[in-house]
Image 1: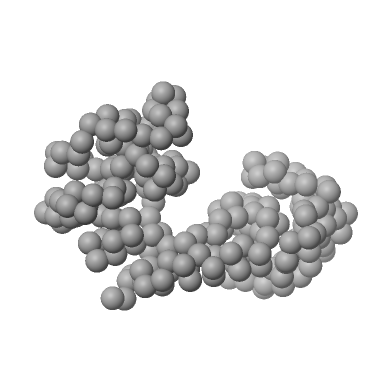
Image 2 (image 1 turned 45 degrees about the vertical axis):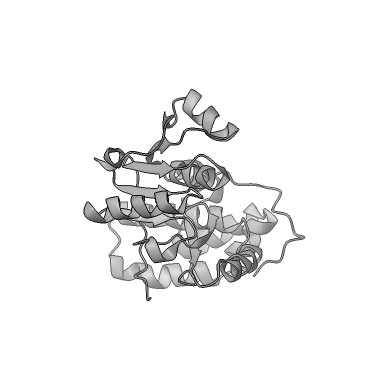
Length: 236
């Protein structure tokens, strides 16, 4: 099976998770992190899920699954240890042409969830097409060590610079050499070290006056640091 890689926009979309155990908890929290509207169907649920329901961050239907629970949903994730129920969820979803993932059962999924490294808006996905989740997990750990926390403010900075250039009617074709210089330069190292003085000097050199790290980061809403990141982690 060769899967078609895609990033889904689930913001404000209704998504269903069936199963209230540890796996279901991970699926629910991941969907919430992406601003989905989540409904949980499960007779029982763990403490985290109960807390989310009490805060009305999710809708919890405290009962067994019914086929009608799929009506109006964008996608469904089955997270139960009941094989017959998992296959029923899959069949019901296929009848509705819905996106369906059954945890640890790639043969009854029409999409699978990769192992993901996140650094703010940077998402690096690793998939073994369901053949070896253990290998995907190991590769993710390697990537987490390589792509350190400095990538979150770095990407936020690049995004804000791009927006400012577009607002000032810079020709888009002129952006490529600018960003090649910013990305290939020492910005990442200086962000990691909290070296705002050199960052500001470099931004002014490449972009001109009016570009400084602190004001740019305040606009993005991303937390920056003047103290740098933990230097004990492996970095690029």
